[in-house]
Image 1 (cartoon, rainbow, N blue to C red):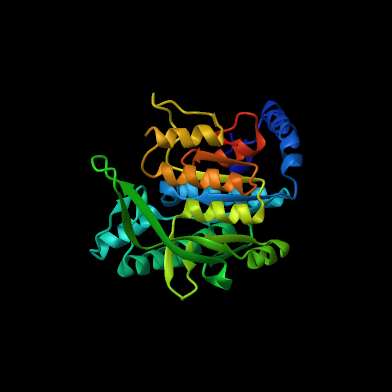
Image 2: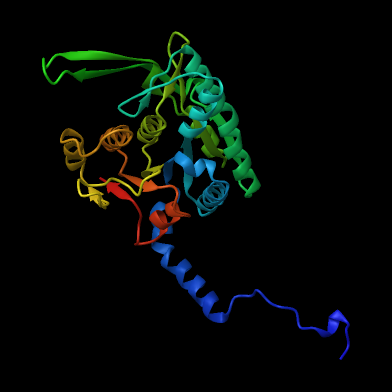
Length: 308
């Protein structure tokens, strides 16, 4: 027998005919969903620990390119809580949370802007470009896209029943969303990646919860869907099990009775506000699940909690 490598039969990684038929079947089953979302705008809030996982971030970038390629217009609003916390720790700047919102003094909001509008925003743009897409990174301050006002929160003392106003510092909420810049980017067949930093009429910079910013943008764009990617499977009931569907009224009740707490509160409030502004439905889903967004968009299986 010859030792020449040309005499050897090389191993093959080709799929079998059965595997290819399965792939073709999957594609045909996706057709009704492709038609449903054709030329529609969807807004995706990308955040949580999935952003820090290289494999999941790579998958997300490829998913965005695929979604854009099939004729859907995705708009991405990203968070960066873990990355902000890491940078604050490195700089020895203490921070705290109230109802899932980071209290932001002047030093904190500078770090937030640096991390969100700088490092993270450009990482996402680069990942999408590397996957074959064309993305544009910007913050809510660009073109006065997100004109913000100071966010006020009140808490009621359970003993005296007296309400107390909480000062969250430079934490804001959208007052006006100017979508002309986004319209131009979408019209140019580009994919906008938005850091949720707003600017007030007086020129102050405000840290805006990424869910809140995504909801306001989705409402102004009259998006078909708003997707909130997070670190949990969706909305969990008192028994700890996933709730697949909720109405707006049911979602509000879960806040009122204390079932929903912490960082899920702004997500539910955002969902309710977005639907009231005309978004057809909101889905809260686990961004740690590979291709969770594709499952939700293009299959009957779905993922997470649908609020409508």
